[in-house]
Amino acid sequence: MVTIVGEKINTSSATVRNAVEQRDAQFIQGLALAQAKKGADVIDVNVGLRPELEPDAMRWAVKLVQDVVDLPLAVDSPNPATLLAGLQVCREPQRSWANSITVEQPRIDRVLPLVVEYGCRLVGLCMDEHGVPRTSAERLQLAQRLVDEVCRWGISLDRLYVDVLVEPISVEPRAALVSLETVTAVRAALPGVQMIISLSAISFGLPGRHLLNRSFLPLLLHAGINVIILDPLDVSTMAAVKATQALLGADPHGLDFISAYRSGLLSRSRRKETP
Image (tube, rainbow, N blue to C red; front, side, top):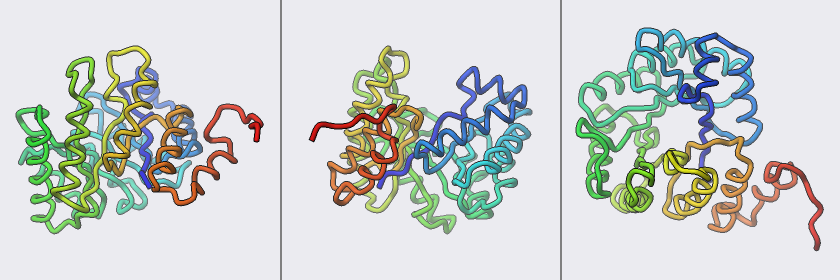
């Protein structure tokens, strides 16, 4: 079964940024609870502010979120100091995720010791100092480097999630295809390595974003993605997750689909169906 990471607590949203800056605890906790109720398995916490302010904001947000939901938290920042701040206040750091590192040695050398110390999971991006590679072959090479580094530090591979990355199709027309090719390549070359992707990145800059996201989702699941970062408050997208897993045989006899349907998670309003 695919793991769903709720993306809503992210200061790329102006309303979330304002809530973090104003220390609006009720708003942040409400977002966490809403995502948990709609089926998120992990709650991402991204409080990106100025570097000198971010660690304190992360400590504040992590404490708030874990007070209202009993789910793993993904401490999300490119700043190792912010990752450390978040992990320090996690009640169960071994359930938490450090999101993320790139394949750049300074970042690796600062973040992997935290993974060792706290026993957390790790998201590693197929990206280095040259940016995001254009081809699936190049991304596979970076995935292999991530695996090599994790093994070098004695970290179990089941704690690594390789982010195969996706760029907006508004910028790169083949972005979806390259990401799908990368998932397939990593699955073949590095069996057992888990993969993660941010669904909404594909539609950035375009209208009808939810439609594009939902259309991309089944392709990712069929290719073999393990974890998807998405908006769990989008009922149609969550319904597509459940339906696709049932169709792909990942949900034997559709039991999870049936449970979600009966609980009302797959539609905004329950309607009686014609037999």
